[in-house]
Length: 412
Image (cartoon, rainbow, N blue to C red; front, side, top):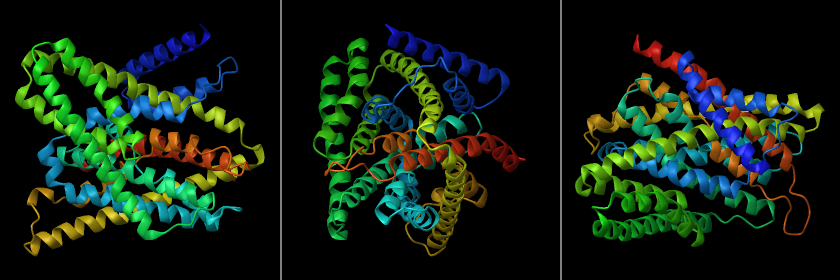
């Protein structure tokens, strides 16, 4: 009964804070973060230990599905060059950049541990980016690039993380094997997503006039798709994204209007609740992580986290502006680049500043194994988790609170 009371209290807190944020014109995610941190420090507040597997299963499938469902496939295709560059290439560059920084900056950090930290913090978060940019009037192309990047980059980060943890346990890293496994994970996720979509589309065509059955199936299938993909050791993220893209096209062409209207209203409520809970939980988790760190190291590692945020921003800025230059050069060279795929320096800066870390980084960090296979404790586990949480908080609060001002300045 006590657990149910805590859940209800958190839900009420989230809904109340979300409504209040709208009244005082503060981005909802930012206020929820602050509220979560403040309530987490209340002595009577029970500790909420986040299970990373449950977090990934509960939040990722519906949020990824909804983002993929609402993204324009044509715009996604037009900007696929930029999206793939940021979602794959930039993830691995960021992983390496953070690893080099952590190895030389943080005492006791080995190369494998540095790459674990780098992989955890390498991917941006779709929920964070969309939650903060919503209502700011950012151009549709920019939103498409941000959403498209965040839909795919989780898969790249999870693959990098898997290899980094394996290296900590003593398994040798072989480049060609890693490359093949990466292709298998992404390709397998694509196949699973496509097969589930085909099966679901046939089923929905049979029940197309029954809105309740159709919407129930649509709610269920992102979770099922994710679990099937993960069972076969391929990317559940990619599988759910492919399902969402396929269902988006099917919905526009085949769904009756009353089914589409009911589905949209239902999903709006689900996504509102999940988005709010994510940011509140991140805030609530910080005091718990803080208690596990030696007090003498808290400010030192907070400084390390701030430096990591700065370096990731610089790496991202360099890669985004290079992509802008490469696209313009390719277009002028009359290669097969659409003019619609080009973007200017203002867009480059907004894309850079919108690259916030979020719930995926937090869930991966908390999911670090407690012990190695030989029974020894995982080295620097608490330090890596603390760094990850602080980087997420600095990223969300620092970039999230200033992004509306930046967008307003660029418009004027």
